[in-house]
Image 1 (cartoon, rainbow, N blue to C red):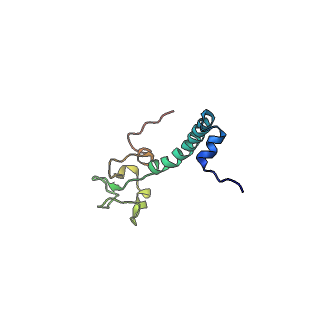
Image 2: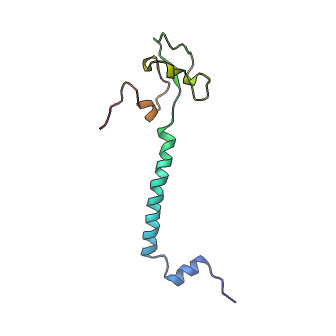
Image 3: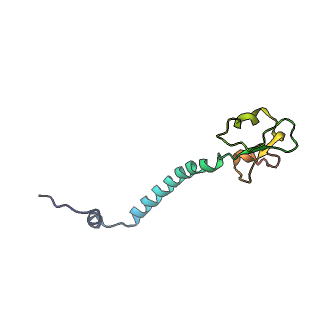
Length: 106
């Protein structure tokens, strides 16, 4: 009958967890980090804060900030960018593109 051994015993019989195993582990970890980092970034770079009408606007007449779940959220698409602004200080790619302060990097 075959003897049952644990993973630790199998590694010990094969020579243990040496340099080669550490290099394989490190290489796989770096490759996994590269993929995970891209997915993780999507959470932050596509986040879009609420927007509200500028005080001096004659076109925009909403009194409350508009969020993604509000019915009139897309109303700003029909307004010039100068008529509305983002409601809070959160910055992402969404808030920076098209703002008055963004700087193009070539």
